[in-house]
Image (tube, rainbow, N blue to C red; front, top):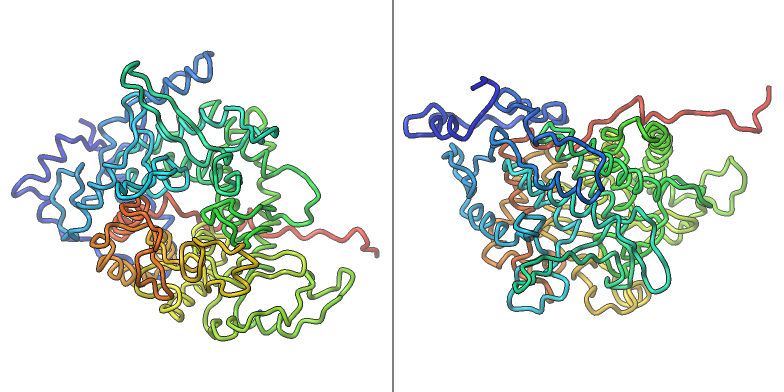
Length: 568
């Protein structure tokens, strides 16, 4: 057996009674305030053969569906059996860490949520709450599966993730029609479900591209999460055979074609409809929401590492580089808000004209809501929710800000300021149960106008200031990257007081998140998976490399060009 390969047999011997691993002490967590991305999987590299992730499958000139099916049936090498060591059901090694009792319960619930297609796991359903009508919670949502995928990757089970990536890629090729209108070729589904026919012994996939969703909005974030997950799978296994498949490369190019196409926009950000992402109901995020812009940025950077130069890939890489330059400058300049910038906006002049304008979006200072002045500390800052002509949405959105840190959309100084804000406004953003999806809540007349009197998005509930445990994994990753693991530990301790006891709810209500959401499903899969991923990342920070990207100064440094009106 090569010394670089770790088999299950050798692992069992090493973990037996009196074995060397049983006497290992937990490695001290690196508390330096610097990024962990460069250390990704370094500890595992000495024991795991990075080239043995998935068996390579020849790419013969056969039909795309047959090629995808062949890849889906490829097995993962037993040598890729590194586990989290947290007492998971798949782990045979006793860990020197004392796992919290919630961990075993979480793994049991996560495995119960697995969905199978023709005998193979292809994802996890949204929730297993038998006390409520299923509605669409019995489907596999692309965004919901992401924390589950990271949990399985970190636990050494990448085959589930590979199956999911290939099945959703297969669904991308379907014709997508809503009423009489056909959606873009590259749109990924919001969700899918598997129909089992026991009589015929057959399984059928049914996808939803938005035609059944609330408001009939296509999911812009699904394609971005798919690219991000493909990069995570490739990073974790060290195997590029999946990403290099012609069909996978084509799938990426189709997604990129949708979001890099030229139009009437004067900004590098993506114009979106309300309800196109995790906030999937009317919440006033139409325009250029931070969540989509941050995911767009991260997906572009991930795609750049995965695209091959053949078949137009080189052209796409050039377009990605150009967009990254413009997008990073735009977001860091116009979306960033701290005490100094708030004071600048407060003093803005309006109706400025020409390229010398300071108030480039003509934001009216009187439109600044009163709560911002109390919320903004002297130390800290964040990316605001939305920026468009004469409109600046000052609300805090957690997912977009955490992704901004992980993608390096935020500069190191901005990332540190976001973490400072968590510390300074702990009671507002964390409260009794992590983590506020948005702050503050819309109330009274504003709630009626913005949400259309949505009974599910009442104040401090659901997407209107509700607390979502799933966001814990994003906070933990951001904390590790910025060297603030103590923030994540404190948040996890809060979660462990109630989450399992309450039945793993989807979300919590109340200003401090003290009440189980009025319409929250129990045994929500991504609440379970988010907790597991947080625990595993704190145990082994090298897992961060699947999720985080370091700043590439060569790519992201804005290129300054002379104005066309410049003369000698």
